[in-house]
Length: 206
Image (tube, rainbow, N blue to C red):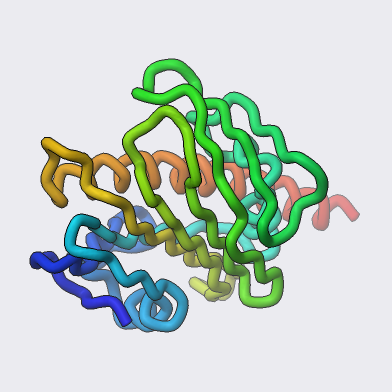
């Protein structure tokens, strides 16, 4: 079980990403922390950092998960991905080559699907190569159904562990990765919420 702290020894920081559906302070609420303890079990080493980012999305979990689970098409919601190639079918152990858009200090990332659970809505990925500084990077994304104001919503949690590059601190590394994840989750929310509105309007017309 990972620690919920900011200290040394590879502790995990839970920044508690605040947005329109999540006005919590640092550390998030009890529900978020419970989900982290259940599903986001990283064991960072001394030279690694780890963190967790939350996002509440105004869309039902099945819709959000339909985007997250697409190991073969991360560009569906990740704005920094230009192309993805998967050799063969998609399943645990599958490898993908991800091409990164210009503007980031990388062009290609090679990634392996570590875990895919459509029932519990869990996706685990490990980076195994590429021209970037995210060495030994592993991430877990989970999607959790919730109801707010009587409407189906989704809590998405993404956690990671990664080596701290030479010349960088744990905080600097965490802030960089967190910024990328926050951009991805904001895009995921925008697309999911737009699709949810379309589904709602379709149901009214029919």
